Image: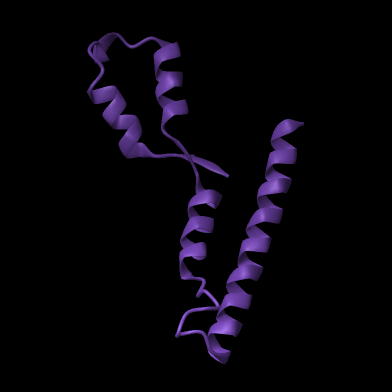
Amino acid sequence: MTVIDADVFLEYLIFSKHIDSLKCGEVKEAIEMSKVDVLDKIRAEIEKEIIPRNSCQYDHEAKWQNMGLRMALKVIDEYKAESEEQDAQ
């Protein structure tokens, strides 16, 4: 799932030397440059929350939390694969 990062898009347009006369191709380029894969961002945030097994915090509760987070990662990966398949068609 890809979305446009509005801040990046606007920065590109604002800092363009000829903002009043942008061509369609240049706007398309700005859009491509500002795309963000939301699922990758969510996945990265979830991965930060997984507690390593060698951590002193690792206990029974951490084990269940990690299992839940890993299940969320699996769902994200499956959804991303399905989305990429649909985009390819």
